[in-house]
Length: 319
Image 1 (cartoon, rainbow, N blue to C red):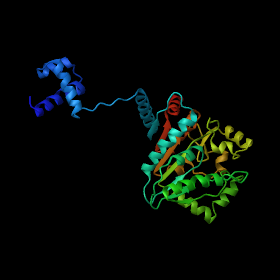
Image 2 (tube, one colour):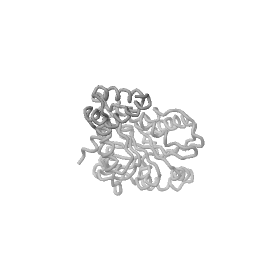
Image 3 (cartoon, one colour):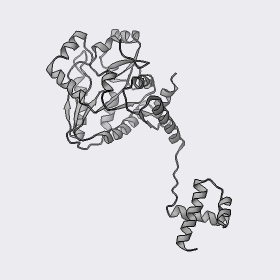
Image 4 (spheres, rainbow, N blue to C red):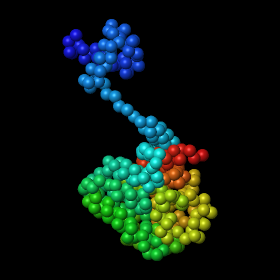
């Protein structure tokens, strides 16, 4: 048997054995050779690169099943990040942030405007971003950050400035409170030209990046732990059925947001406004974020989701 003929025979043996699932005895009978010859032909096929075998751990199958289910249920591009049994909430947050940074990098294009919310998850995401210049990139802050003590703006400015440095981008800050004391004050501010310029820049976004907030997340959401909400605000939110937020707009479990009093005083884009942005990347990590994550997906705020395996399973277990 010539070398060329042997490779052709090796390919036939590999096709029957690996692709068609035939036994070695059946392959030997079809080729009129011995079983030991089939074994050598399969070895030759592997060494010649005619066959490539890859192993996938059981976790890969679990992750893929979760990814498909989330995509089917909510109509999003889902990325589920594998989590080890010993991984805690912070480890899973770091894994989601690192993976999210990679997906975000693939989405960036020269000259685009990207809207970024702020919080614990987005800060972790920016910390994992790979530095590379993106010509003409603009970053606009999606929601205000000033709290009742006058702080918050420095924290958000630091995160966005870090992102701008990594991408060689320009930043458009939104120097207004996260929540106004009075609806009338917000309405008046929204008529100011300086605020209108930021709102117009937000409307030019082709990509938004944000997370979901939960009242009781194990890795605390920034908005719930840094003097943004009073005890009266929290009572009002619970009375209105709120279970978490996206861009400091509060949602009920069914994804609705209208009729929640706090939203009339908030500064972030609501789900209808977010949905006008073509690409919307949502990152979530932490089992207690499963309920607000489901609300966000029901509200249609995301086109792309990055979530850890444990949170994904918690999301799909909700009834």
